[in-house]
Length: 260
Image (cartoon, rainbow, N blue to C red; front, side, top):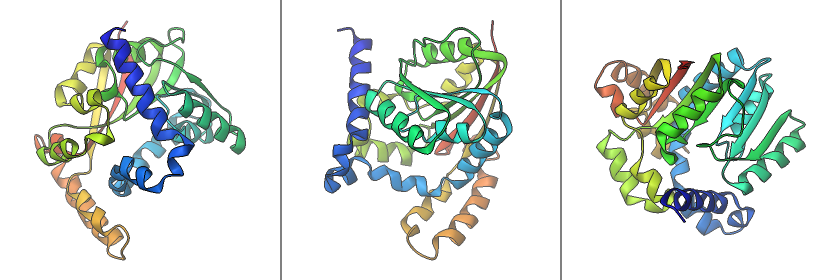
């Protein structure tokens, strides 16, 4: 087995474990392997941005959820009027997502596929969503495939964590069980986002979540919403300037005008 094959096997096994229904039957282990989910409680500004983007660009479009996981964003694109496809390396994820799409009566199809070697023809999709997956992949292979299957008038919406903040990086080092070894070493940096310019003529970015993470310990209290609103306002100021913007937890970047 090559190094690349071993990496992909490890990724598939890790995400199959996370999405196996048997995990939910073991509350202690489930909590251990998903303890990072609490941080997503402050993600509403990012979520609103993504939802607005889907509402604007999905209707009547052919869309791809690139490494779809449980299919949450594939469903959102279908509900926004897209002809939605989801792909993932995890066969359990794909099976779960297809079952849920059928239950909801949504026009969404799912298939097991390698994101670094897509089976789709050139210029297939109007919109591609890439949510928290690039750090699992060989970045240049992924960018190449995204540019290849995107229509000239289309766009790729990427949501990724960043590696510049030493506090966030320290947390990642203290919780190795929450991610594969490869992904832990490949959280995106500024240079990785800028590398997309080799494949797309336009790369736009915006940043989310810095001090707003301080609201997480209060998420089950009446203080949470007013505290989060105040911290989001502060984030807007801090993340509007460089270099502090690159210390954000997450970056959302939009790729368009694929290179020939």
